[in-house]
Amino acid sequence: MKHCLWSLAALAAVAVTAGPACAADDLTASLKKETVELKSAGPLAFGPQGILFIGDPQAAAIYAVDTGDRAKPDSTNKPKVEGIDTKVAALLGTEAKQVRIADLAVNPISGTTYLSVARGAGPEAQAVIVSVSRAGKLNEVSLKDVKSAKAAIPNANDRRRQEAITHLAYVKGRVYVAGLSNEEFSSKLRSIPFPFDKTDKGTSVEIYHGAHGRFETNSPVRVFAPYKIGDEDYLLAAYQCTPLVKIPVSQLKPGEKITGTTVAELGNRNRPLSMIVYKKGNKDYVLMANNARGLMKIPLEGVADVKGITSRINGTAGLKYETIKGMSGVQKLDAFDSEHAVVLLGTKGKLTLETIALP
Image 1 (tube, rainbow, N blue to C red):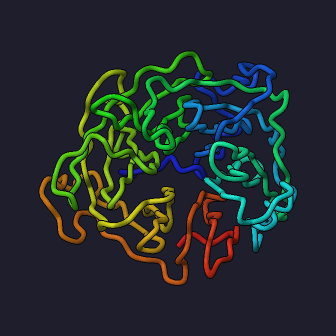
Image 2 (image 1 turned 60 degrees about the horizontal axis):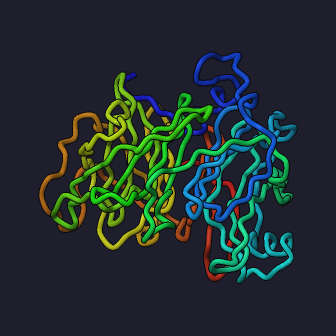
Image 3 (image 1 turned 120 degrees about the vertical axis):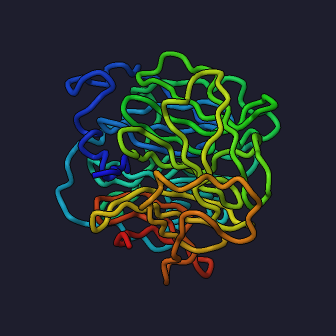
């Protein structure tokens, strides 16, 4: 098979058994019991053994937290919680208008969904992690005296601090982190070994932006998904307005400056919000939520051979997409299993967490 994917659904077995060195490694042994004090709660991702990675853009740090959530599910329930913002607010003792859900991630071992939440607004906002069981039960995740570790992000962007960490994922013993630095060539991808040791200065990434008609170095990767083309590992990265770019993982070396290959231009005036790679009918697809064009399904057939976009595009070009009917308002999503995704869906002022079949 020419292509294979690293989606979280496909990583379920890895998350249960694998570590960066050998399958018998207990990665939680590298963690120390401490209280994690988040300044903000942003992007989330799961690694092996129920370890949750939390991006804290305000602190310019990534935290690894042992959730202890390693029990295999005892039911086939799939979560659906209507008015999730209202219920999160009630759990935290506030009103729905005081709650913002920044991201979600599904633990592939248990099927529990985790939410990163801001309670309040501005500098006084409280960062909270909330879990949602398969049955739809909500709990605040305690970060007091938990086994954890911290990786500081060096030279994180000060002027646009919320974009110091825009997305992250754990793959094969490394945590990949997208965001902006203070450097002139500011768009960065970092490859951090786990267990955490030290964080390097990252790789600067340049891309050709078809809708803007120029090469850009200061636009951050908004979301990305790992994917394997042939024998080589890649990140498929989505940018604002909306180039889709493939970036070889082998090129992510400290201090290097690289150019990604723009394989699709999905239309301007659009912000990608969340994406996964999945397989259906022996074909691979990207499923991308965005703020202007609904839920996109992008076939990856031919991604190895598509020529990079290097000239101005009016409209779309490269890989094609279709819009999934009846799924407007998807804000966040993650793989639930090989056939389903969990989505955060906002329509008519109502926020719902639900499970959908992969289209």
